[in-house]
Structures are given as structure tokens and as C-alpha cells.
Image (cartoon, rainbow, N blue to C red; front, side, top):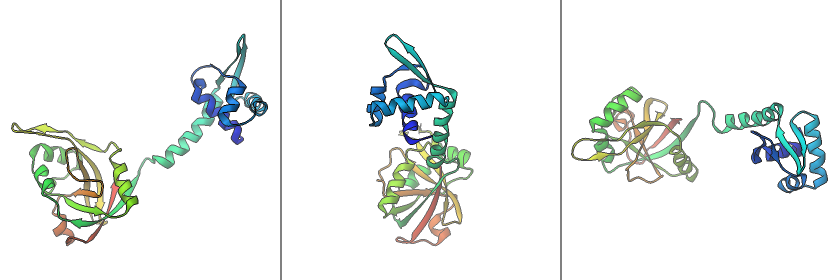
Length: 222
């Protein structure tokens, strides 16, 4: 299919012809794809001849809708793009330098309401503390921000009688190609997008022999 034919097919779908017949003139279509009315008319005729659209003349012009063949043509492109943008199994690699936190992670992970849910979802009892990594690369900082848009595994907030706790979002992770753990985002946390918080069944500093400033690679699965 030629580029202009596809653009017309997409334009018709955007206007509703994917679902039901619509009334749209060749002049309007030409304006949408920045071409002449004659060119738009010619491509419409080709799309109809090839079975991608159906047209019916009415008193005020004509009605146009996509056929199953036309819808399939768009869906092929959609499936290709979706496979590129949202593959079934996707991971990000982020690298950061170890920094000392404020103890916030230890406080949260010591709460029974969180730990029970994490054990159930991730299959391990988290060490009561997070490994905080400072991300230096602007590109990786952007990627870390994008992670927050994925659904992840949600640990529900709760109340313990004296206060309420917000939810956590978790993503399984592999730390330095050695330790299985997770990256967490605390709903009411105080870190900006340059900090990545990592949890594991053990003290990662001790397990990996880490000190402040050491580089750590984290593969995050979404």
C-alpha cells in the first residue's frame, strides 16, 4: 500500500470510519493529508477498488467506512508498533552510584503491613532497608521516570492504628547480574527522579561489598 493510501485510511479511521460509516468529502480528506482534492479522490478510488473501504452515495455526498480488509491493514501496523514500544517481556538497565539514604526505606520496610504483601508478591522477605542509587545520566533519569508510568506490582497502603501508610509500586530486578530483588517507588516518598531505591532479601551493601560511590547496575523488568 502506498504511503498516501495508508494516510487516507488512517485519517478515515481517526474520523470514526473504523467503527461506522462517516460522511467526509474528498476536499476534507485532501486537507488532512496535505494533498490536492484530485489526488485524494484518486487514492480513495484505489482503496475502494482494492477492498479497503466501501463508499455509498447519499443526497449530501457520500458515506465511507473501512472494510475488514482495511481494518486489518491498520491493525498490522498497530501490532508492529506495539511490539516495538511495548514488547511482552521488557527490561531496562539503569546504573547509579551508591549513596546513603535518610533511613526512610528502613522505616517503611520494617512495617508488617508492607512486608507481608511483598513476601506474597515477590517471594522474599525484604531486608529492612533500601539500597539508594544516584542516577547520573539524564537519559537514565528519564527512563527511571518512565518506570513510574508502568503498572508494576502494587503494594496497597494500610493503617496501623496510629497512622496511615501510602502504597508502594514494585518491579522485579536483577542487581549486578547476581542478586534478585526489586525496585520500589514509595507513594509518599521524598526522593526525586535521580534516586532509585532497590530492595532484596539481604543487605545489598554487605552482600555485594558496596560503599558510597560504587557503581551498581540494575536490570528492571516491567
